[in-house]
Length: 608
Ligand code: AMP
Ligand code: MG
Image (cartoon, rainbow, N blue to C red; front, side, top):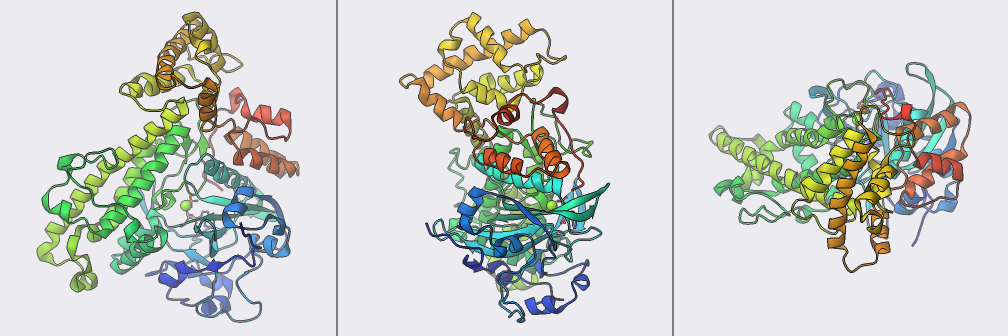
């Protein structure tokens, strides 16, 4: 496989070439010549982005690089010590610019995206990349996947509003590690290439803190909020341009989007009940409807993963919901420790709007906002390309018909969302339990009962699945043995105070193990047990970056000046299914073991 230095990496700027720039700085040169402080903050209309150069730290230290990210981006690992690499990911150098010359109109020049969003259910107006600046796109020649590389924390943009455009060390460590951890767990996510610290920089939060920059990348950074903003301004043109861009450039062409929902087809792939789509609406599923459905389906799959791995984003505003169905914008996220559906990692979310159990319905709430932004295009049916509609919008005499069609289609897509979510959730839970299929009754008897048990007995969610991946059917073939094995799932310091008596707890787990054993024997009758163990251990991680582990690392890096610890945790995050990582054996054991009692279910503030 051919790999490149960051300078030689093949680069493009499709986003800035195809989408409308900020009218005040329509070319790279117009922004480049301007004093940086004059670019903003301000309101930006009829635009998808503003050209803006990074304002990196003078002095910085590259402390983390993801080996998997290098591979996915086709960057040669032997080039990461170069000045080019370090200066680029620290925002000190624009690698696509010939020094001293004025950038041409089609130059690959850094930009910040314009978007808005609903925050905690309220319309928040223009937000945008307030501290993220994209540098370029690059396509891996082997996989043909195109990524947009961006820096988080490299200075103010026109979208910074009242804030400083910076990021602090603690939140940058968290984002760097979790992006790559989620990816290794196969959970759709934006990615992280590198972590750069600026220990001397002073960034004001509740106290003064050192600064940092994460170089992150994704196939697209478009969010639902990207569509919310032009909708709030009645800017039909920009919505249509963004939708066309999403279909053609992000999803690879209109022909790659899902086919029409056939109302005669009630297979699980669409799962749409027959009478959801009737008559006209069914025939008038135009390409924008298919685009909407693609976005919905991807988000359904993403949130199914979150639920199956007990990941909580913590701030699911529409600006933090990707149209590609990627986990995006890592603030007060967390993996659950003990299973508690009401848990939220967000200290300020008193209403529990973004609690674990609410994630599937919140993502749908956000997708309905997108449905509203795309509503006119979806509802226009076969007329979506008529000149009059494109130029002037909906004529009064067919407005009712359009609205009705849009509503019907969005509602039907809601059914599709549920069906895709359910199918994906069942697939993942079956795999985590080591079952080959989800049979009638499994959902109630195995999944729900397990979750209820974990909740009632205050047991660790992800550890339970890993522990199950070592238990043979022989070890649980009698009631006595099952009660004995039940203790494996307890915390080392015993049951929590609300969990009831130990005898009852053992009995409850034993009952579940009996039902579980029956199903395992059904699915694996003729296979050696090692095969099932291997399958289970390849989907049930030994290591996930829990909040308490991240806190320890932050403390050690920020306060004690340690650096190697980042390399060790990154290796674990990149290879979560391994047994060991050949780092520090004591540390590995601790981080994969019981969460210390007083560090369970921690919460963070939104400040980052
Ligand atoms: P978030 O809560 O991280 O999704 O951020 C919401 C909005 O605030 C986005 O538009 C961010 O770009 C912006 N933002 C957050 N922190 C900062 C900061 N330190 N400087 C500038 N903009 C910020
Ligand atoms: Mg955000």
